[in-house]
Image (cartoon, one colour):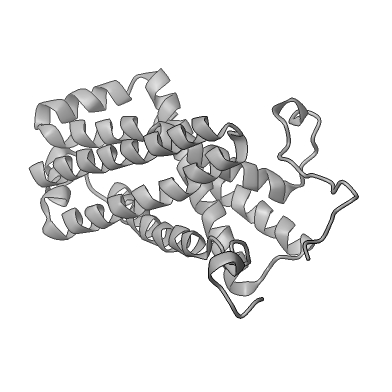
Length: 136
Length: 121
């Protein structure tokens, strides 16, 4: 006998785009949504990455031309965005593996791991920015 | 859980549903993390960054094979992640299916491009 549902069950949907601004995410939630954003960003920039690999390995001249192109400041900015996406995605991914391996899934542990994730990805991005724009 | 798992009683939902993708996402992630660290090692290693060294790195057979494994891992990893995004946000079945098919075609094409670059070097 199939069960007859008389009461309408609540439906939980994703946050709608119009709700994003007013939605106060915990730090772990911010790491999580940025994990997705950074992944999507790298997916859309995949042709650029492959083009860089292709051009850098084609010949000595095309390597030099690419190096010159990557030295332009708008391109440097794009490289910085790409670097941040990789750093955040990698750190947030390691965070997932840590949570899986050590079952660190409590509220406090979630916050600590989120702080650690941001510390790693933002410090790495800052170091890369210094290398790009200051030449350190 | 019913002991009969076929026909009308077939279990179509459950905790293990999607386990393969969950595991594949993690295994491919480890491969990609290792590849990223190898490249990072190249970039921060003392010495000049020039075409000769860069070309020599990719001319080595171990690097070609490691890169090839990374490309295959990337293709699968991106498929799992991007499919999740389409499933979460695209409610129209026809549009979602189209985007999923396009994603696969695009990723396979990119893998082909990467292989071409690797074995041309």
